[in-house]
Length: 311
Image (cartoon, rainbow, N blue to C red; front, side):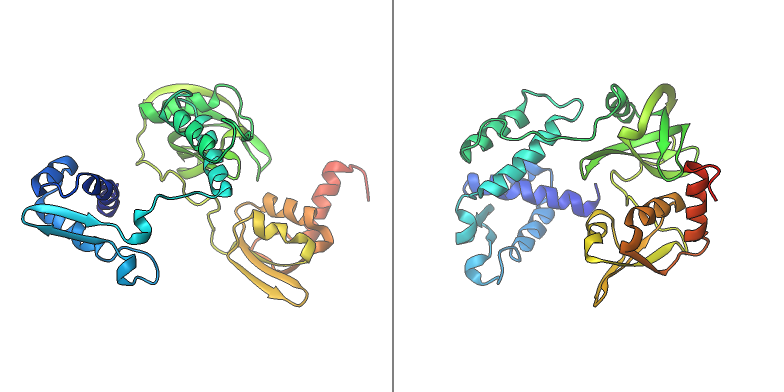
């Protein structure tokens, strides 16, 4: 964690503990949260600025150090227990259910017990919904999680969607994360010589390696779509193609009388080819990325592949 993240985590844990102990001594707080009196004073001064909009005195947290003791009083709004709406409760249940499906998570541990209590508090059953994630080849998630924990390399048999090819590559896993129903692996790839993102359901096999991870740890969830130089496309989409904006990260979206003008990055030409073939007449190319062969070349390549002998 960075210094700012460490401080935030300390303050978030410190505030309810101080309130629950009704003015604990400064030395007890410092011992509990492993901070110096100077750090504690700085944290307390920061709390003066915390509260709810429009930040009037009745909506701010009161905090002070007096006679060697620390006092914190919540604003009136914050002093009331949080009450979740059914929709908010179901969203938390869905998130918790997803975490329970993570390899290595105790199915009967604190998270599962908290999930059951939350479900009961909003009047739902213990398992009111089923979270469906993209299926992954058996053993892959456990192998990746093990490589991350043991800080070692692993070989994966990976299908690259953009290039429509499978290949074995050695990677140094750094983290697993979920996005839009898919598991992703963040890792340093020896084949590419750089950090890469791999979709777990496109890993069809693996080989454990004994070599330790050598590269610096990659971010847990770096951007899914890096933007190479001069690889941006601008499309004019009809209303029926609005799903593109919702499904892919866009650089810019502008409403036009004829539809939506959308600009986004292109990582692989094959991905752009598939998107345009899928959109058909619902997309007009306003600005093509440099180096892209063009629609005619895409159409000729598709005809040659799927209709051999056609003219």
